[in-house]
Image (cartoon, rainbow over all chains, first blue to last red):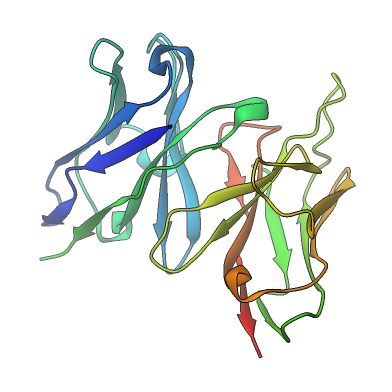
Amino acid sequence: EVQLVESGGGLVQPGGSLRLSCAASGFTFSSHWMSWVRLTPRKGLEWVANINEDGDKQYYVQSVKGRFTISRDNAKNSLSLQMNSLRAEDTAVYFCARGIATALFDFWGQGTLVTVSS
Amino acid sequence: DVVMTQSPLSLPVTLGQPASISCRSTQTLLLSDGNTYLNWYHQRPGQSPRRLIFKVSNRDSGVPDRISGSGSGTDFTLEISRVEAEDVGVYYCVQGSYWPPYTFGQGTKLEIK
Protein backbone atom coordinates (compact mmCIF):
# COMPACT_ATOMS: atom_id res chain seq x y z
CA GLU A 1 0.00 0.00 0.00
CA VAL A 2 1.37 3.40 -0.98
CA GLN A 3 1.88 5.62 2.06
CA LEU A 4 3.16 9.19 2.29
CA VAL A 5 3.52 10.69 5.76
CA GLU A 6 4.42 14.35 6.19
CA SER A 7 5.95 15.90 9.29
CA GLY A 8 7.69 19.07 10.41
CA GLY A 9 4.88 21.60 10.29
CA GLY A 10 4.28 24.14 13.04
CA LEU A 11 4.08 27.79 14.02
CA VAL A 12 6.90 30.03 12.80
CA GLN A 13 7.43 33.78 12.79
CA PRO A 14 7.62 35.76 9.54
CA GLY A 15 11.15 35.55 8.17
CA GLY A 16 11.75 32.25 9.89
CA SER A 17 12.56 28.79 8.53
CA LEU A 18 11.01 25.35 8.66
CA ARG A 19 11.88 21.99 7.15
CA LEU A 20 9.14 19.60 6.09
CA SER A 21 9.68 15.89 5.53
CA CYS A 22 7.68 13.20 3.75
CA ALA A 23 8.34 9.53 4.47
CA ALA A 24 7.37 7.23 1.61
CA SER A 25 6.61 3.51 1.69
CA GLY A 26 4.79 0.85 -0.30
CA PHE A 27 6.37 1.70 -3.65
CA THR A 28 9.76 2.16 -5.33
CA PHE A 29 10.39 5.74 -4.24
CA SER A 30 13.43 6.23 -6.47
CA SER A 31 11.32 5.61 -9.59
CA HIS A 32 8.91 8.49 -9.11
CA TRP A 33 8.86 12.27 -9.41
CA MET A 34 7.60 13.85 -6.20
CA SER A 35 5.88 17.16 -5.48
CA TRP A 36 4.84 19.45 -2.66
CA VAL A 37 1.35 20.93 -2.99
CA ARG A 38 -0.24 23.33 -0.49
CA LEU A 39 -3.83 24.13 0.46
CA THR A 40 -4.94 27.54 1.63
CA PRO A 41 -8.46 28.84 2.32
CA ARG A 42 -7.82 31.75 -0.05
CA LYS A 43 -6.22 30.04 -3.05
CA GLY A 44 -7.24 26.40 -2.70
CA LEU A 45 -4.66 23.93 -3.96
CA GLU A 46 -1.35 25.31 -5.24
CA TRP A 47 1.57 23.29 -6.59
CA VAL A 48 4.78 24.40 -4.87
CA ALA A 49 7.68 22.35 -6.23
CA ASN A 50 8.70 19.02 -7.70
CA ILE A 51 11.83 16.93 -8.10
CA ASN A 52 12.78 14.19 -10.51
CA GLU A 53 13.67 10.59 -9.67
CA ASP A 54 17.40 11.20 -9.28
CA GLY A 55 17.04 14.52 -7.49
CA ASP A 56 19.00 16.52 -10.04
CA LYS A 57 16.06 18.47 -11.47
CA GLN A 58 13.87 20.72 -9.35
CA TYR A 59 11.09 23.10 -10.36
CA TYR A 60 9.25 25.71 -8.29
CA VAL A 61 6.25 28.00 -8.44
CA GLN A 62 7.44 31.57 -8.93
CA SER A 63 6.30 32.75 -5.47
CA VAL A 64 8.71 30.42 -3.63
CA LYS A 65 11.75 30.53 -5.93
CA GLY A 66 14.88 31.45 -4.00
CA ARG A 67 13.19 30.77 -0.63
CA PHE A 68 12.20 27.08 -0.77
CA THR A 69 14.38 24.08 -1.66
CA ILE A 70 13.03 20.63 -2.49
CA SER A 71 15.31 17.62 -2.04
CA ARG A 72 15.13 13.86 -1.66
CA ASP A 73 17.09 10.98 -0.14
CA ASN A 74 16.32 7.84 -2.12
CA ALA A 75 18.28 5.66 0.34
CA LYS A 76 15.88 6.76 3.09
CA ASN A 77 12.74 7.01 0.92
CA SER A 78 12.39 10.57 2.05
CA LEU A 79 11.34 13.89 0.48
CA SER A 80 12.06 17.28 2.07
CA LEU A 81 11.11 20.92 1.67
CA GLN A 82 13.36 23.53 3.25
CA MET A 83 11.38 26.75 3.64
CA ASN A 84 13.26 29.98 4.40
CA SER A 85 12.18 33.61 4.64
CA LEU A 86 8.65 32.50 5.39
CA ARG A 87 5.77 34.90 4.85
CA ALA A 88 2.21 35.01 6.15
CA GLU A 89 0.98 33.94 2.71
CA ASP A 90 2.94 30.67 3.03
CA THR A 91 0.50 29.60 5.76
CA ALA A 92 -1.07 26.40 4.44
CA VAL A 93 -1.44 22.68 4.79
CA TYR A 94 1.46 21.17 2.86
CA PHE A 95 1.02 17.81 1.12
CA CYS A 96 3.57 15.62 -0.58
CA ALA A 97 2.20 13.98 -3.71
CA ARG A 98 3.55 11.43 -6.13
CA GLY A 99 3.93 11.41 -9.84
CA ILE A 100 4.06 13.19 -13.16
CA ALA A 101 2.25 12.91 -16.53
CA THR A 102 -0.16 9.91 -16.45
CA ALA A 103 0.71 9.35 -12.77
CA LEU A 104 0.36 13.02 -11.85
CA PHE A 105 -0.52 13.42 -8.14
CA ASP A 106 -1.88 9.87 -7.96
CA PHE A 107 -1.22 9.54 -4.21
CA TRP A 108 -1.10 12.17 -1.46
CA GLY A 109 -0.01 12.30 2.13
CA GLN A 110 -2.29 13.48 4.93
CA GLY A 111 -0.65 16.91 5.07
CA THR A 112 1.16 19.02 7.68
CA LEU A 113 0.06 22.49 8.79
CA VAL A 114 2.46 25.42 8.53
CA THR A 115 1.38 28.66 10.21
CA VAL A 116 3.45 31.81 9.68
CA SER A 117 2.47 34.40 12.25
CA SER A 118 3.98 36.68 14.87
CA ASP B 1 0.86 30.22 -16.90
CA VAL B 2 -2.26 28.25 -17.82
CA VAL B 3 -5.23 29.49 -15.80
CA MET B 4 -7.90 26.95 -14.85
CA THR B 5 -11.42 28.23 -14.17
CA GLN B 6 -14.05 26.04 -12.52
CA SER B 7 -17.77 26.62 -12.34
CA PRO B 8 -19.86 26.65 -10.35
CA LEU B 9 -17.85 27.32 -7.18
CA SER B 10 -20.75 26.11 -5.02
CA LEU B 11 -22.99 23.21 -6.00
CA PRO B 12 -25.98 22.24 -3.81
CA VAL B 13 -27.42 18.95 -5.02
CA THR B 14 -30.30 16.72 -3.91
CA LEU B 15 -29.37 13.12 -3.13
CA GLY B 16 -29.88 10.92 -6.17
CA GLN B 17 -29.74 13.83 -8.60
CA PRO B 18 -26.96 14.47 -11.13
CA ALA B 19 -24.18 17.00 -10.73
CA SER B 20 -21.83 18.58 -13.24
CA ILE B 21 -18.68 20.67 -12.79
CA SER B 22 -16.98 22.60 -15.58
CA CYS B 23 -13.27 23.30 -15.88
CA ARG B 24 -11.88 25.60 -18.56
CA SER B 25 -8.25 26.34 -19.42
CA THR B 26 -6.82 29.46 -21.04
CA GLN B 27 -5.05 27.38 -23.67
CA THR B 28 -5.56 23.96 -25.17
CA LEU B 29 -4.23 21.13 -23.01
CA LEU B 30 -3.82 18.85 -26.02
CA LEU B 31 -0.15 18.13 -26.64
CA SER B 32 1.46 17.24 -29.95
CA ASP B 33 1.91 13.65 -28.75
CA GLY B 34 -1.87 13.32 -28.45
CA ASN B 35 -2.00 13.41 -24.65
CA THR B 36 -4.16 15.76 -22.61
CA TYR B 37 -3.14 15.99 -18.97
CA LEU B 38 -6.26 17.06 -17.12
CA ASN B 39 -7.08 15.41 -13.79
CA TRP B 40 -9.93 15.67 -11.27
CA TYR B 41 -9.62 15.34 -7.47
CA HIS B 42 -12.06 15.09 -4.58
CA GLN B 43 -11.22 16.36 -1.11
CA ARG B 44 -13.46 15.59 1.83
CA PRO B 45 -13.21 17.82 4.92
CA GLY B 46 -10.11 16.99 6.95
CA GLN B 47 -8.78 14.57 4.35
CA SER B 48 -6.16 14.72 1.63
CA PRO B 49 -7.22 15.02 -2.03
CA ARG B 50 -8.01 11.79 -3.86
CA ARG B 51 -7.52 11.46 -7.58
CA LEU B 52 -10.73 10.46 -9.37
CA ILE B 53 -9.97 10.95 -13.06
CA PHE B 54 -6.69 11.22 -15.00
CA LYS B 55 -6.08 12.28 -18.59
CA VAL B 56 -9.62 13.69 -18.98
CA SER B 57 -11.68 10.52 -18.78
CA ASN B 58 -9.76 7.65 -17.13
CA ARG B 59 -11.26 6.58 -13.84
CA ASP B 60 -8.90 5.65 -11.01
CA SER B 61 -9.15 2.31 -9.25
CA GLY B 62 -12.10 2.16 -6.87
CA VAL B 63 -13.88 5.20 -8.31
CA PRO B 64 -17.54 4.33 -8.95
CA ASP B 65 -18.73 4.39 -12.55
CA ARG B 66 -21.37 7.01 -11.69
CA ILE B 67 -18.43 9.45 -11.76
CA SER B 68 -17.09 10.33 -15.20
CA GLY B 69 -14.88 12.87 -16.94
CA SER B 70 -15.09 14.22 -20.46
CA GLY B 71 -13.94 17.07 -22.65
CA SER B 72 -11.16 18.17 -24.92
CA GLY B 73 -8.99 21.15 -25.78
CA THR B 74 -9.92 23.82 -23.25
CA ASP B 75 -13.30 22.57 -21.95
CA PHE B 76 -13.66 19.71 -19.48
CA THR B 77 -16.47 18.34 -17.33
CA LEU B 78 -16.79 16.11 -14.29
CA GLU B 79 -20.20 14.46 -13.96
CA ILE B 80 -21.78 12.52 -11.14
CA SER B 81 -24.84 10.69 -12.42
CA ARG B 82 -26.50 10.19 -9.01
CA VAL B 83 -25.10 12.11 -6.04
CA GLU B 84 -24.57 10.16 -2.83
CA ALA B 85 -23.76 11.46 0.67
CA GLU B 86 -20.11 10.40 0.29
CA ASP B 87 -19.71 12.82 -2.64
CA VAL B 88 -19.73 15.96 -0.46
CA GLY B 89 -16.52 17.95 -0.41
CA VAL B 90 -14.46 20.05 -2.80
CA TYR B 91 -13.60 19.03 -6.35
CA TYR B 92 -10.54 20.35 -8.17
CA CYS B 93 -9.29 20.08 -11.72
CA VAL B 94 -5.56 20.41 -12.47
CA GLN B 95 -3.65 20.69 -15.71
CA GLY B 96 -0.38 18.85 -16.23
CA SER B 97 0.24 19.60 -19.90
CA TYR B 98 2.19 22.84 -19.48
CA TRP B 99 4.38 22.98 -16.43
CA PRO B 100 5.94 24.44 -14.41
CA PRO B 101 3.73 25.42 -12.84
CA TYR B 102 0.98 22.83 -12.54
CA THR B 103 -2.21 24.84 -12.07
CA PHE B 104 -5.43 23.97 -10.26
CA GLY B 105 -8.93 25.29 -10.60
CA GLN B 106 -10.36 27.24 -7.64
CA GLY B 107 -12.35 24.29 -6.39
CA THR B 108 -16.09 23.49 -6.43
CA LYS B 109 -17.81 22.78 -3.12
CA LEU B 110 -20.52 20.14 -3.46
CA GLU B 111 -23.07 19.98 -0.67
CA ILE B 112 -26.31 18.11 -0.16
CA LYS B 113 -29.46 20.23 -0.26
